Each structure stands twice: as structure tokens, then as C-alpha cells.
Image (cartoon, rainbow, N blue to C red; front, side, top):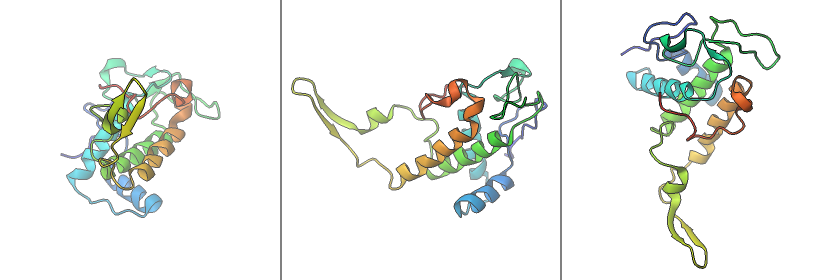
Amino acid sequence: MALIVEVGTGVPGADSYGTRSAFIAHAANYYGASIPDTDASDVHMRAAYAYMSGLPWKGKRTLGRGQTGAWPRTDVTDCDSIAIGVNEIPVEVIQAQYDLAYYESLNPGALSPSGSIRDAVVRMERVDVISVEYDTSRFVPGQDVTAVRVEAAMRLISCFLRGGGRQVRMTDAVSV
């Protein structure tokens, strides 16, 4: 099923801020990656959109509960204190979605974790003489490197997030 792109007007059923073709071009231009032009790419874009919808954005939804995602928003300024239009999706938001979608393509399910990172790696704990053993066998090679993509995405949108997004971690987004 094709993506339904939000353009700032409250498109009914929107599930993305960007297009598949732009995501594919972004991945090629910024990461030298080849993203398949298939519905699987749309799944990653939707996961990033859903993740972003749960972030602590400044301002409020322009159309309230009548819109599917976090944007468009009112009462938001960019990093230079210039007001964002009530019918505008900032380019930083779109680029962040591409970065998050790329991360999701490399680590399927990473944007919707079912537990904490701590639960995934702590194999044994002992309270008496404090002992912790970590299970690294479940780490995906290169996952720590791809996590840098998430950090880059968060830096792109930090001025749009309450508190500058300083306290946002991968597991902080809420389900919508």
C-alpha cells in the first residue's frame, strides 16, 4: 500500500512526511545505501512516522486530534527562532524521518522495542556482592554504528522538541 504523505494540510490517513522515492534518494546520497523500491521501504517509513508521532514536540497539533501525525503544528519556531507555518512540515522533520526509516531498515523493529535495552542485555544479576553479567550475543553487528543515525535524526529536530530533546531515548516515544 502506497504511503499517504502529510503535506501540512491534515491529509486524511497520512502515514509519512516524505515519499518513498525521496527516502531512497536520501539513503543513496547520505549513506551510499541501496534501499529497495518496494512496499518494505514504506513499512520502515511508517515505523519512523509512528515513532516520531510519540516524541515530545513543542507547540500543539494544528488540527488537533483530526490529524494522524505530530505535524503540522502551531506555536513552533525553528532553531533560528523563526516561526514555522501552521501548514508547514519542516525539512528537518522530513529528513529525520528518512534517517529513522534507514535505521529501522537496518534493524527491523528497533523503533518499536518491546522491552528495554537493559532487559535485552542483562543475563544475570546478583544483589549481595553486586555482580552483573551482560549477554552481548543478541547484539546485531554494526547496530551501535547505525544508532548514530538516530542521534543524527534527533539533532536535526532537537529545536522542535520540548527540552531540546536532550532527555529523549529510543524507548521514550509513546505509542499512538
